[in-house]
Amino acid sequence: MLANFGEYRQTGNESLKSKKYNSAANEFFKAFITLCDIAIYRKLKLLPDSHEDRFRILRTNFPEIYRADVSLFDVYRRTYKLRLSREEVKLLQDGVAELAKKLGIKEDL
Image (spheres, rainbow, N blue to C red):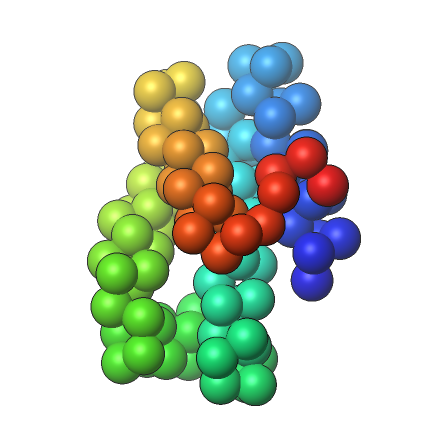
């Protein structure tokens, strides 16, 4: 999972630098979700099967991460229909950095 996190984060940074904001948002959200899965696995030895499953587990066992996840998921879902701004993508990037720090995971894998 750490390798996936590193790849998603790196690709998100590259897309952001290239001003491909929706692509960057997709990659940062995948990085965030991977970090959520790492937190879940560390504590519960479970891996969620879907977003719904992940939301349920986070809501019950990790309320702080759940609140961040729901907020970032709303930003991510905008990519389905709209073009995101750099500022919106930075919300996702910052969410990844904050959760990685809380989990003691270096971002420069």
